Image (cartoon, rainbow, N blue to C red):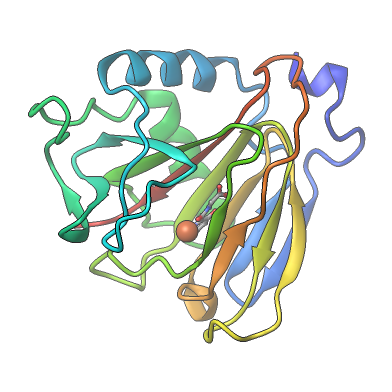
Length: 215
Ligand code: MD6
Ligand code: FE
């Protein structure tokens, strides 16, 4: 449905190189119905929560995970953990539609051996933001990250290896997939304050799934 009603008419299927090793596959996650149903099931088992940073700030982005390892933060630091600290149980299994999309998108982008063991799920309500950061809690930086955007559009800030490097702004819309690795694997990036809006299939929210090989 999403592709018919057109979040990005004419854009689906386009491939945009962002930087060495980083590519946007426009609309690659469409149609997104199976992903959204699977997301509901994950969230029923492991609800979204606003985690606390080591510095003591509560994040405006709510998070949960699926897969063998989940990314967590608390006063003790950032890390991957096999267990959801809220429930004491393992994170939900990675749903098949998640795994299939992540592997296929990575292969298309030039990473044919990528098999994620972790999927961090971010939920942005209007006003939420994710400040500039590097993804560096994974063991093997030769493995890329696959990022899937669903729901409301967002501006993705994409910098360089230093926090002070200039940032490019890349609009990410419902169904877009970013595959990111190689020379840009440790580039700083973030999401500025999410603008209000209503997505026809998803509502007043943006979800981002980031697939990683964490262990
Ligand atoms: C987001 N994404 O798009 C946040 N990290 O909501 C990330 O932080 C991210 O999209 C590493 C690789 C790809 C990403
Ligand atoms: Fe990130």
